[in-house]
Amino acid sequence: MASGLEEKVSVSGLEERVSRMAVHGGIEEVKKGSQRDSRVVIAAIDFGTTYSGYAYAFKSDLDKAKDTKEMCNILSKTWQSGSDAGLISHKTPTCLLLNSEGKFDSFGFQAEEKYNNLTNDNAHVGWRFFRRFKMILLNEKHLSKETVIPDDQNNNMEAVAVFAHSIKYIKNELWNQLQKTGCSIDAKEIHWVLTIPAIWNPRSKQFMRLAAEQAGIPGNQLEFALEPEAAAVYVKETKVAKESVSADEHQLVPFKPGTQFMVLDLGGGTIDISVKEVLKDRTLKELHRASGNGLGGESVNIRFLEFFESVFGKDSWSKFKNENEYKAAFYDLENEIEQKKRTLPFDNKGNLKINIPPDLVEIFDQNDNNFEEHVESLEGLRYKSGRLYIDKKIVMGVFQPSVTSIIKLVREILNDSNVGHVSDIMMVGGFSQSPFVSKAIKDAFADKNVIVPNVADMAVLQGAVIYRHWPEVVRTRRSPFTYGSRLMRLWLDGDDVSKKIKRGNEVLCGDHFEKFVTINDEFKVNERATISVFPVAADTTEMAVDIYTSTEKNPRYTTDQGCERLGRLVVQMADTTGGLNRQADVTMTMGSTEITVEGKMMPKGKPTKVTFDMLSSK
Image 1 (cartoon, rainbow, N blue to C red):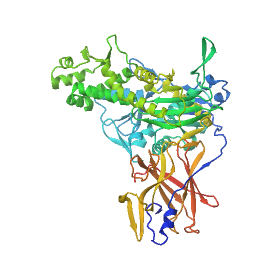
Image 2 (image 1 turned 90 degrees about the horizontal axis):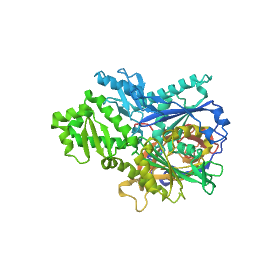
Image 3 (image 1 turned 90 degrees about the vertical axis):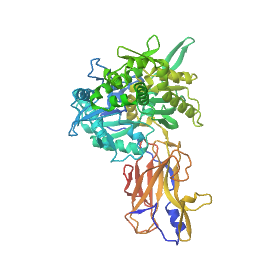
Image 4 (image 1 turned 45 degrees about the vertical axis):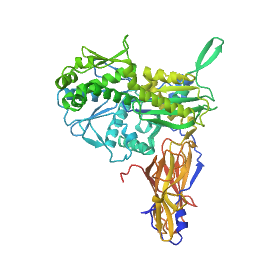
């Protein structure tokens, strides 16, 4: 394969050849008809870090909806835990259990309960238990098809298989629910929507598509919905804005055209922020690229566990956390933290009560004498009858890093030149239901109308269904990254000496970042960036171009901080008749929820095959 990146060429005509290696950015708008189709059911899956669920609607019902209330009447499942408390939830824990042969056993509450029972009976060895594994798609810089995830017993399994098992279970649950309706539905009549964080890079999206297809969802029936964007679609159609009816009376109405609002999607793993404006035709324009980080609700859980480690000491905590005989007790403590974190039920003395597993206290007593006496020496803590009472100041300190991060991000976005006057901030996602988090946001942005919807944890799912029914509701999006390619060019004064490459009498500069899209550039939904590719040798039949992303507006080199290799475009140029005078135009969709590519041989526009591999480990 000839590569436009590192192909060695003769000295003669070098300047011309180098220019042929360039990737030229251009924008074209592709007019398309409505994306609606004849499928009967729209089914959305929200695959979360801590909890997952689904929602669906019959297309005919959405077509007949007379108002926003009927439009938002989306069907979903309520899940019930197997605990004595019988917790009822819109979602189920993102937990997967495989048997010792690696075959699927259960998912969600059932997987959690069964693995707990197995650990209590010390019969869990060899079983494969996975949970809270979604964050690998944000954190893993070298994500590929070969990426692995450790199970609870630190045995690795291919990540794509773990995701595929999980998605397949939710897909089958939804299918079974549809069968119970009595309607005759063919699997081909379902359009699937999978919600994903807007801050994911295209590689993570390609990974998720691969897992979904392995789970049995056909690629041509699958579309992604960006989580904060889906929430924005839902929020836009709900009655959340105040309108004066008389001097002393108001009513709630949907946002009016011209309204600029922000969506804070505070999930278990990620914080996703999106800013939209409602246009005259009630479509949405994006005012700022999707932003966020990995400091969602799970980060608070992690800091709670770090706090307990400081209380019990590293030795006692390590034994409790890692030894198999204490697995069930450790999960009980984690679930206790998760439930208390959501509502923060402080007593009248300002203490949060946490039930401490007896095993943990016993381990401490064996290693460090008496736990009750130890607690008496610690400020802000009290231990009585198996419960640890934690002072409110300590609890707030656990939450503070995430809250500070959210407030900082929001302020940065509100100060951006593309953002005009945001009047409303909508908080959705499970973490937004924390009273401390919502109060902190309201206090920090007292001049804004901060709203937490009653079904904050379901806003993304319901919005995803509405979005798929009316995809044109999103008019524009902004690029989350700067995109470009890596190539060599002629040496310029001021170039980094370490990039200098000598070939004959010519001096080149390597690792040049040839930009074709800038971060925060605005694109209409069907707008594309065009890359013109030229061969570097007359007999070249395949042209390879490495695509890079950057978090900076004007990166100079592909090795600069914030730059990352995204993947490789391979363009088929089988007809060598034109020699060096051949050109292929590769178009990349930039205004969509994921990057797709297609190619044409110019000037006649003959289609040519283009692949964009973002998951190769090489």
